[in-house]
Length: 405
Image (cartoon, rainbow, N blue to C red):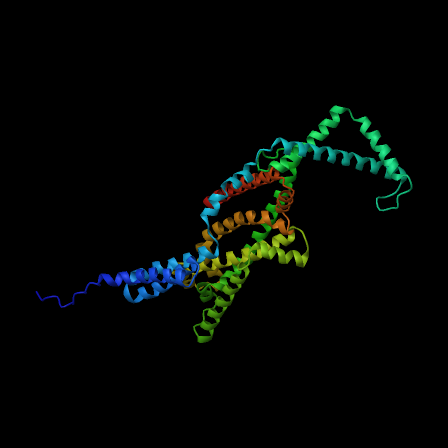
């Protein structure tokens, strides 16, 4: 048997593996200690340099070192700080579950409640006097107006028993204490509040439905232009003009998808609110544009992976291009189309729930108002409704996927 003439591969000296790590250590210390560069920036530059050096000394360490450089840079730019999170754990617990009030704070809340109740009763007295005089708040007040208001206030106060007055004050004091206590518990469970939350929640669902539907109707046909496979069926020419046209069409269409999904729904909602005004229609358009970009890319990628067997079989029968698309292409991507569309609908429900923060309709308007007025218990109830809603939608969508996919 002939001897194997393949030359033996010489082992790499161990010192070559140490070079990148020596560069990493020396550069980090040098940049941080001598040039006073922030430790994160020093590690970023050092690991980047070590990664480049490892390309010539120990290639297997190049990728990990370059990844380390990217992670260190991104951690510094995003201000990751586990210590800050640990130091603020008590504040987080207090914000979520509330805090205990001291006796002094309870007394201040009670005093505030008394003042609020008196002002409310005086406002009622003033409104009654205005009605008796037949004038408005903006009209000039006649002589003796304040005296008549004071007399009416005294009369209204006298109609209230001490127990009724105390109940009014205590209701106001309870609200004042809740504002000072904070926390998201206990939840708001009054019937009128729940009905209001559900009304805005149903508006959120409507925004998500139409935002997803408009995007789906537009993305499915346009994605045929973004896929090389489908364009080869729609335009069968083999000349340089046909090939160049197909590539250019797919390139421009995909860049259009990139532009649509390049902006968050929140930013798009700001734009549409400025253009067409406040209301849920602005939210529908914002979701539709963003979802069009997402679904268009997903559908185009799915079309690029279709099998050639079915396509060739339908083409062999002499069918025109639209029939090939209908009977050989779309059935292959139908499962992906259904599952991704339903997935985006779930995501759009969550997105629509915050578009109200900029006036684009939905339950986000209520969340913003309640947070600004420190009514955290009501916010917690709204959040729970959204969670239940998303869970129901997820269950229904999963059943639909199992049925049709």
